[in-house]
Amino acid sequence: MAQRYGGQFSPEGKTDNARPAPKSPFDGARRTRAGGRVNLLFFAPFPLIWRAFRAEPAQMAQFLVAFGVLILAAWLTREGVKAHEAYDARKIAKRPALPRKLLAAALTGLGLAIVGIAGHGPLAAAIFAVLGAALHVFAFGPDPLTDKGAEGIDSFQSDRVARAVDEAEKHLRAMTDAAQRAQDRGIIARVEQFQATVRNMFRTIEDDPRDLTPARKYLSVYLMGARDATVKFADLYARTREAKVKSDYTGLLDDLEANFAARTEKLLNDNRTDLDIEIGVLRDRLAREGVTTSSVE
Image 1 (cartoon, rainbow, N blue to C red):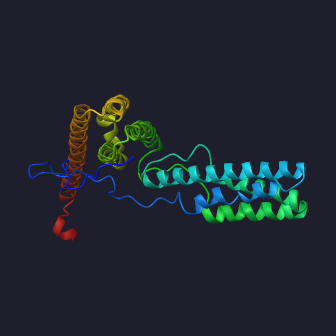
Image 2: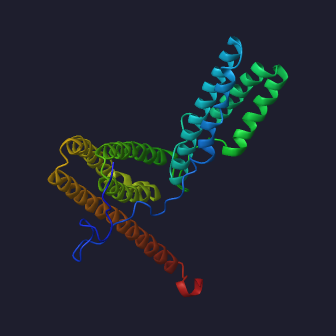
């Protein structure tokens, strides 16, 4: 469906008295690797369908099974690449529970082995299986196999932060799904902008897990409320397209975003205060030992 352009000079564009533009959802973003080569994996097996319907019944069944296995491998590869990107984007993260890319490599080898058996024989099947699995691992790499934590932070604290951020990310994904149902580009962009502010808090907490306790209400109660409000808004706005419903919802996001930004700033200020205290204590100890800053320099 057609969508109205929402740029600077559109009716809903910014005005002179508009608030400063908040953090962009694309700040620090990198191009996803879940495209290009991954998408080719979905198209590569389709010649098997053509071969299947030109073969004997037994071979046809083998080619169709191979097609299904290779499509499943392509889907697992895409999900594995996405999970790896999410892992890399965070400073504290748990390894994926299911090694999707390695499993996809095994399925790729299995699918090609079935093709080899159907069309060429056992030796070709073995060669196809080994080459297919090896090239898949070479092209996409293995999954993360270890948990990732910030240096100098014990595993218990890292696990607490990882679990809290994982749960909060589920709320954000639910918001994205609901915003897509509204079929309004402005709403989708507004939700992404709010999520960028929220994820800025995530990164702050990952830098210092002690911030998790004062921010836990934001990661649970407030995000659950934002998720539920987005779901209700999307269902209502998709039916009515009322401007007031949209205005009320964006106003709610404005308030929530301001609260998240203020809390994140307070966490950063508290961390700076803690650093200043540590520096002051260290200088006092050095002074008692007869060491001054100038002599150290």
